[in-house]
Length: 353
Image (cartoon, rainbow, N blue to C red; front, side, top):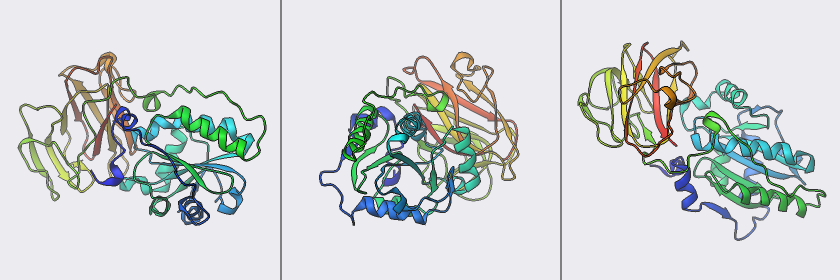
């Protein structure tokens, strides 16, 4: 994986390698924090707010949440970020989401605006479509939380999921340092649902898998090569080993995704995890695409994700991350299959949880 994708893996792995970082030396006026706040002016638009001038944040404690809306780790962090924004707003605390895209479709303002509404995000979000704020802050993965004190200095950086108690204690500390009174000392305990629910107790054995030609891994097929170009007819592999996936039907392979040329195409993946998510998009003109999911050849029933019925039926209507499996027992190795009943779907990446 490239460095910028390093932290889009399993939440438990992120916690295990302790990627929450407190700055050893507080940043000065020309340090990363000052650069990041100044770079807010370079955003390509704002959601939920008029443009916020960096100077207007003087005297405020600021949390910059670097995220992108197809990232499962970012989605599972949102209940905490949202709760902190509401709890400490009256005490001079400001949350600003910095939406830095991974995939091309995440660069479109209308997609980010729709995602913010659907995800219940009510704090300001700046569109970092060119990654200028990301680069000036030295960010390397999603999600990254930068905690900036009332003097504009970055005091703490947390990368990845988890560490929520430490993060909230940092908010309280910075508010107290800023002279705020009656700062709450208790901790939030939000309960996210669907893709925003907390990660499972066991880390997934299967890892994030990209489907486009630029970063594809683990692909096998009886016939057909995963190379960028015109549409190809793929014959699926008759058997799949762990963390291997295959295509069936006629697909066109692009850098970021594979696109189905004819109805009836399939994707199969042998996985071991609680959840299976797949980043999908509808046809190029926005028409929805119907699909059907099977686990070990059967309808998922109670093992269904929030985006399908017990019979495995669902529909791709927007570009986003779809939760297709949430099973009770994450220890078993199982075969995931999805069949698309209409052409034109775009498939980008599997993530697990």
